[in-house]
Image 1 (cartoon, one colour):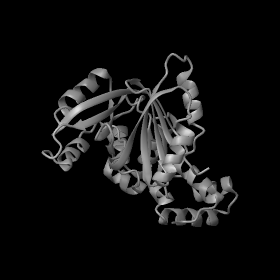
Image 2: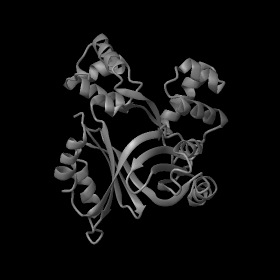
Image 3: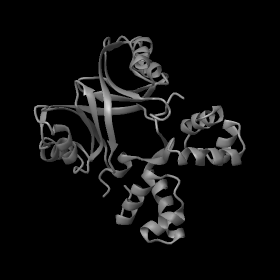
Length: 152
Length: 151
């Protein structure tokens, strides 16, 4: 695994917040020359430290005021393949994330909707009709924060 | 506030955020100059908050991810605030959410391996204030994680 020093960790924290920051600006923040910052960032990227970029949009301003997390239990395990369920669920545009989990549920879904009526439509027409779907547990998101994680 | 061109740009941008600007302009059917101007404007008015890099935690040695669903003791008026304030101090917590529903709060926790997770769970998470019940979901795989909006 890649060895990281404090500067690398600080760089990961900054780039996680702003993927498009220039090597010059990054260097000024971390006390490095522009070429040195560029070389370090290149090394981190080549080591696969970043999975890619994500566009962080203001969902509320774009008219999506409701986010619901669903715990989904498959009813007929063995009869319906996980692949069929996964293929169908990932094709639903309102489903933002799908995680396969172990525990009280089989899948955890993050669903975005314009309002509660829109959410009900997605739930009834798209999610409850998925192959093999059984028990569903819904929790409406009130607040959310992402933390920098253990690279401090 | 946004017109059809803005939405077209956002759709293409969020579908492939790693795409170089020239190709993004081509896919959205605009000139590179228009693209830059529109994106700058959407950044200025807060529609685009940022373009973030997603950290690949397994590449940093964190191979375990657990979703902890917590029910809080709501007889304590400051249960939510105090729980979140303490949870923020745990570096292994990468996400914290609160809900309306059966679950009051959820923490995404990462650890190097199961032994490390047990340590974090016992010493730093079970000791968080006002927990009435706690349930763990272990992540097996991320099937979809782009978090795009259906624009």
